[in-house]
Length: 290
Image (cartoon, rainbow, N blue to C red; front, side, top):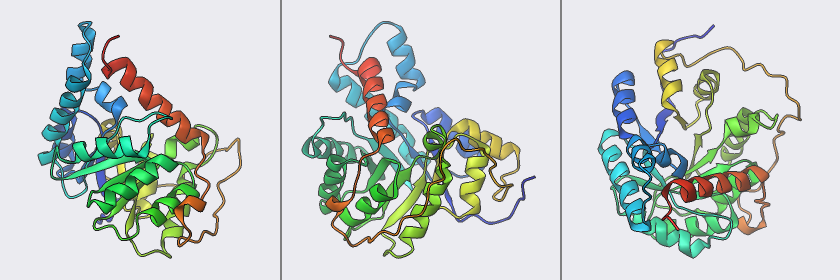
């Protein structure tokens, strides 16, 4: 049974590439703090789906313009958490190329956060970005070490940095993703507060309510689950998530946030898989036809 409490510490973002959903969810909730996008979500945008269904394909320039138009439609509809825009990257993309994309995308709207993956090249791109005064959101985070590296690499940023641990993806391999969120939250208690925790890969109402119950800084949620939340009268406390895990729980690691970011082990199979998935969706749906 859920418990409704009249308080809200966690900012709510919509995980979507469709401004129509932004309008609908904002009307349903009465507010929307921000929105996150990625290549897969943009490929699911109704206009993009219709265009591709006609047998046409975007040129590289058209793809960029389509993404820009979508986020410009979203931008004025959301609050202070902004709109996260993801660079197009695969396993071979250099930090310099990510940064150049990010710099172009950052100019699209006034409330942009540029998304880079939690890889060595992605974190280097983030470091370059914050040094240039840009806001960033570090995505595909699956370990404390990745989150710690983000913290270390972005010290001195003028704006808060987001790091996005993916709950549902970890659940999918038999590990409780909410444990990672709690571990990063605990680790950041020793920090200076310049990195904010943005829980992602929310796959159930239970995921959302659990994040709210532990006062995660932010959570980005698909429209279907935000609709369920509204129907349930916006609970912020619920029953514990009960699962039988096929693997081990995710233990807390004692980490020195002052270490050089390069000293952390950034490798994680799910980060690699996530990059491959986004690259595939980009190539199949949005890349120029050969």
